[in-house]
Length: 414
Image: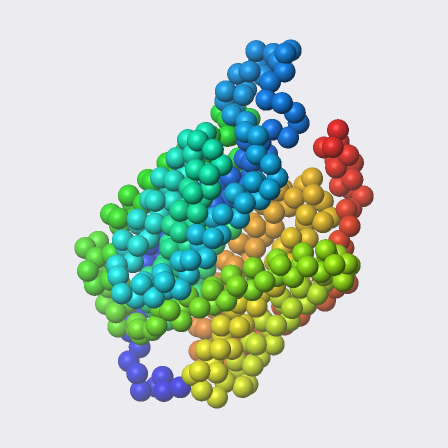
């Protein structure tokens, strides 16, 4: 490193700075997007009639009013499965095109219009459901296109807005909105459905997304040098310590992570349907891959990176192979306590968000104390944590319904 020959720009206090306010705004946008993504998965239980005909001769007035508040549709499990997966088809077709287009066109417009379109489609979702499964399917695919565009293009923001030593904190703060969105929608959807009806879930999150898209158009500029509200000192600090980079490369880890996640789902079902492996073996296998591979590629990044190409490959693999945990610990709650799965996902999402916030702060501390060998220490620490978590999962991991969850499971069946 040739840090001694470079003039270090005067750091502007990060607390209450505009760039952190921008990261917080993007955090809220991700909360809205994830909530809109997940709410149909939760409301489907109420939307679909799985207990019998739509009406019976002795249906009470109260039940009739509840059907008006919570419309019920007669969709088969096959149709429900297609509706659930439809949003991912929209996300699929946007990954590479949006990664390329984000380098060419305004990020402000791409994210703003994508968030607004996703929110508008959320507002139209109850009407689409009333029109039939085909209309709802089309809405979800279009919403997937909008959400995929926003989730991929947002990584280009930090090319121009994040100083190199703050990219971890700014990126983590913004992306942690996905976890908080999952927690919020799991927490409030049941209450909204019970008190206001399931259509209000889409109306509330859709309206919040529309409001955030308007704020986005007002507050965000593609380049800090063009923003009228940012202070001169902060603008000079960002521009003086910023290095340009390829936005497509920034998006590649997420593309690979998405691909590995899809592959894991198919492999898991294949192993189970063919009785090749027991469920507990499958969970521990993918936990091993999802925790050991990132640790391995992190060490490769430190010791075997002889060129920019090998460094890029190892960095992408270290960031993306964690998706193998989607077939392990990330779905394991459904095995051990299906009746409490929503609650467990909410709790683990919060724990994960806290971990992200702590890790970004810790990285900043390490970078400030020892900038010469900081990244070496950070990647070693990541590898050690992954290995320790893997050992914990291998020793204590289970895949059968636990005793404390069996009582509630039987009550749910009744």
